[in-house]
Image 1 (cartoon, each protein chain N blue to C red):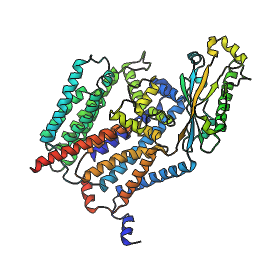
Image 2 (image 1 turned 90 degrees about the vertical axis):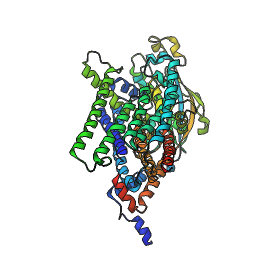
Image 3 (image 1 turned 60 degrees about the vertical axis):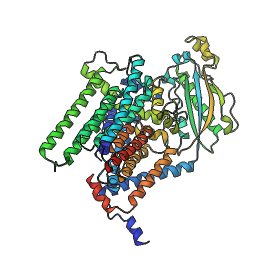
Image 4 (image 1 turned 30 degrees about the horizontal axis):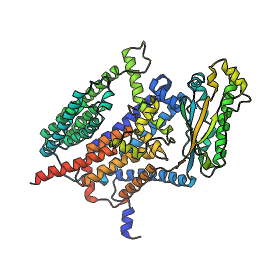
Length: 231
Length: 389
């Protein structure tokens, strides 16, 4: 390595603030690099997203506290490696959002089945807790058809019928209007949205970090240091 | 440098204060915060933990940005003497402000009087945007005025804009970046012919700083008392009511940042290009903060959340939000440093952009900042051309 290059890499001539800034930038760049490398290694993700429709009566009857958190738990395991947040399933809205995530290459159908199983078990357990509900035979969340492959999930419609079984219907009819029982909840427009773990601002952030590190690694400007200190 | 330092100090101060409050409170007792937690679908404890994470990351990001400021100040030093402004710049800005006032008066004369604070936002949105473009420029020109006479002249241009603006933060920005920071800078460095720091000068400018701080504090208390609230304040004394409102007001940005992070997988969010187009008024739409506001206000988008650099990082990047909370201010620091190399001091513009960006994200401030820097450059050329003639 030539003496000129050695001088560029040397810390001599650099002030403490410059060295501290360089250290911060290198640490951030390392974090970003790990994220990008692992993000690309993991590949893209499929976000299964659907709109959940409910009747207003159901919303009034079935308190939000009972349903919030249904999608918590098992779905977490399908999140990208850097996300630990639970998916969104806020059933308090008339058109709520269900988001599940699977890694590319994993059988999306199996993931979707798991999502539905999870919803089913949670809804069933909720219903079983209620003295007027008999939920043992309730296939509460049931898809009409499950697609054969991941690409077929696009714009796929499933029915979510929490009170499908007769005993539940009878129990519920004592509490709520009859029309509540028809098409109580419909999860529809499930679509696959490609989701990358590396987004455009990640690229921008990395470029800015690289440019800044290059700036601080470049040979110090002797004249500049003096006038900069005055500012 | 003092302007950027102040902006970073404000980021750390506001994040630290919000973090301290968020650490103590039960979110379920504060209406607006509770709405956010319900929308996220989290119990109070989990929601508060998410908000605290946003606060910690914001504070650490602010500290690291401070270190980067010191480094960039050394690495991209100012080229003395920085360009100053006087008559020509004042004439052009005066014309711009006069046109702004005439159009605003016409709109006011031809539309019903606003019944609430929100009404001006949809009655004259374009003029509000123009005002938001002009006032930082006036402040920048005042801080780089040729002498005290021109400084007062540029500050005078701010008065009608301040009177017309529905943004309460504008008074705070002018007080801090137009009076307090220049006073501190002058006290420490001295003006022309003032020499080194003396006790008398410290007392004089210190008095100005204390006076302005008192006015801002009093304004905050009066506004908070007058502000309507969704909180259950029945049976509480005025002092308790003010405290409750301040607690919610101080800590809610962290909960909004947490909300942003929870919406990171939602593909319906406005894209960066959407946000630019909305900011430049190419087409109507929502930015991420109005989108998040609508999320917690029954679809009404007449307002914006304060999702911080943290929220923007969580939404718009796939990585750890700490990276973006440092890189976003770094982008502004680099821009400021590069302009200094060509003797263009835009420190007030960049400090304001950093402060405002720290509240709503970098993307939301970039279009306005680009226009302001371009205008400042043109004004510099015009002012300079006059000087050489």
